[in-house]
Image (tube, rainbow, N blue to C red):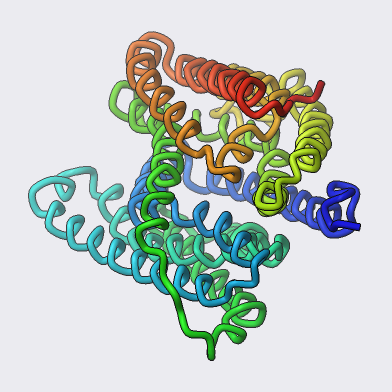
Length: 433
């Protein structure tokens, strides 16, 4: 019997999915706890500066990796199916070289622009930004490591360092400040984040070395640079536009709103992210299986994965969304404090948007893992353009509520557009129905 014959009920993918959900849940819990601790230790203004700095580094990590993690998941899975270790080693070499040179280029450009641009900003923001640059290579190389392990179907080992360990370490650091009654500043918070990321990267590298790198030592690398570049471009557009689209509202709020609005919106986003943790975890678990099934032309098994995953995503997302919709204002006051209760309406809007989008299932992952990433990238570009056009007037007139409306509405529109495409051109159903 083929290992894909009962794919979603098979032990490998079932265990990977369950483990991924558990890890993502724990990660989401600690990330949420970190958000609470940061909000209380930094205050609204301090949290705003921290969010701006961390958001900037997240955006700068996009050109440092340029879609390589998604490319790795697909091609490592493909090469693993065909037992092509030479191509696997060649792809890893070129991926690491690319991240190294792009990170160095980002450092150089940032250093030059500092003297005639961003050194004139608020001192707290500038100092926080300077420390946060250390995150760029850690995020870049960490993404390569995690993507490679996912491609090999070591889902737990891929997720463990960057999700659970990094967030737990950051939680421990923040709790130490609470316990010893130390004063936390945005600059110190970013430094603690860098330390947590570095320690997590070391653990992740150890996992990769044990599972793959030792096997590749005597292997002669082979390269398909032209093909990799061609395939990386849509992945780059996808990852870049998705991150820019999600972080754009932070900058629009900072420019046309206030630094306090940035903090309020971040609290709402942190709460709403608990609704999507199931989708994120299952998408990470099923992506290499979708790629492998597609390589073997197992379309029936792809449908099985999609149906089981979409229903699990919705069932687990619904109670979390309802909890925030019905009791979010009380929860915000209890957890974050009265100064963050203005995040309730944006939180409700984001939860509704995430829940409605969950009904369409893993449509983006499906397109990316089956060679149709260009369709996904085109939709992302369109949504980014619409976000730019709509966000400025909506934020000027409605502040954080306007930002939430733009984000949620475009998320719903994009997912339903992609669902229609998949239904028409691939004859697959990604929804819960």
